Image (cartoon, rainbow, N blue to C red; front, top):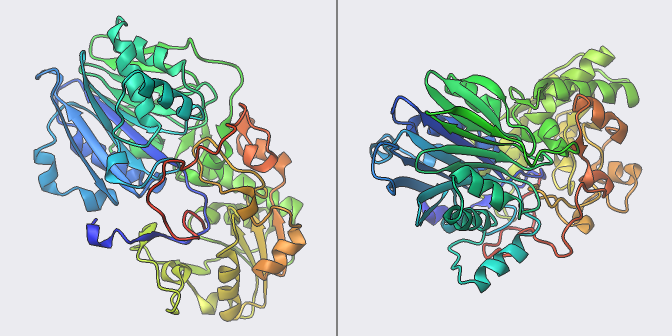
Amino acid sequence: MNENIRSHYFENDDKMHEECGVFGMYDFDNNDVATSIYYGLFALQHRGQESCGIAVSDTEGPKGKVSSMKGMGLVNEVYTPESFEKLKGNIGVGHVRYSTAGASTIENAQPLVLNYVKGTLGLAHNGNLINAPELRKELALTGAIFQTTIDSEVIAYHIARERVNSASAEEAVMKALRKVKGSYSLVVMSPRKLIGARDPFGFRPLCIGKRDNAYILASESCALDTIGAEFIRDVEPGEVVTISPEYGIQSYKDMCQEKHARCIFEYIYFARPDSVFDGMGIYESRLIAGRCLAKDSPVDADMVVGVPESGNAAAQGYSLESGIPYGTAFVKNGYVGRTFIKPQQSQRESSVRVKLNVLKEAVKGKRIIMIDDSIVRGTTSDRIVGMLREAGAKEVHVRISSPPFLYPCYFGTDIPDREQLIAYNRSVDEICKIIGADSLAYLRKERLVEISGGRQYCHGCFTGEYPVEPPKEDIRGEHEDFKRGEDSKVK
């Protein structure tokens, strides 16, 4: 992305955002992997649009040689066909980033590449460490010099230090991970191995795939589909896996535990609908959410519509359960990513209107049920409702496929402070008036177990009950030196 356009603001879309997507690949037949990693990251682009990176190495070549390329912006903006002439290697890791802690700068782009006494280490991390400040201070007091402001570097340093006194790279990874608290799905490239790890609670997804004689680690199964790889299985919460030609997939479950806390918003919003998360299809989860809304919060109307894209499946579920026809009310500009130049306040263009337009002939004179996945600050829900009314909708009933946000998140989701949440200290009726809807209803908390397929999940942002004690200081963005607009990172 042109640095002259770094004055881009994040789309004012009132959504919460997830931190990152990771992808790793090891081809035992010594074929180059960079192009496949590129397409894998392209499939994971929804998980992060600030920066991206690829690092590769040749396991048959010099032990310390790693080729890497990182940049600000989207995957197809950073890489060109010529880029891959320099990215030669049969093992590699890739990353797409959206920052929840640490500034949006090229220094903080991943993968991180460290050169140390045992060779090289390439690392891509998805998640947030709640004890990162203490670990960073501990490292700094022993002479560590940090090149970034992200907690991922803390993990990389600890792995490198543990490797000096460990028999293997995976042993060093496990020793390092015992020191960290919080959420992580991790892909590590050592000189001769690809290592994946998931925190014991399983906050973030990570799965294993195979294509011919190559193995893949990816945040979501949709990335495997994109490169024609077969889904093998999910990495279990707390599991560390090592991939090598000598032993294939080795599994270490020393850190596995019975208590899990998958991020419920992977099911509701973050993951692509064609992905599967710990055995539960995301599309099916969203259909169930819509069906639950129809059962618990019915309303008489002419058409059910979804706010693209994550509201569509829930809208279909509502339609199937209620018998009210499902229709299309919004046309989405497919060429607008989650970044673009924010219109000046003096201009009439709203960032919502840049991305969405209403099909007037579809909604005119009709009673509309509008399904969306969440309301964070409410800064655009009122605009979308207003757009439907301007197009001639007779009534607009809003249904949200998640409970109200009442608490911040410390595990890799950028839910803001409570005072900025529209649901904080407001009733549903008050929120309904603010957004200008005829009625408003949220998914009941009791229904979350259904959309997760009975799996254990984290609901801290709805209840304030976290699986681990949250930090006493707000770690989210504490090192930030790149300021965005007042309504950045929101829907």
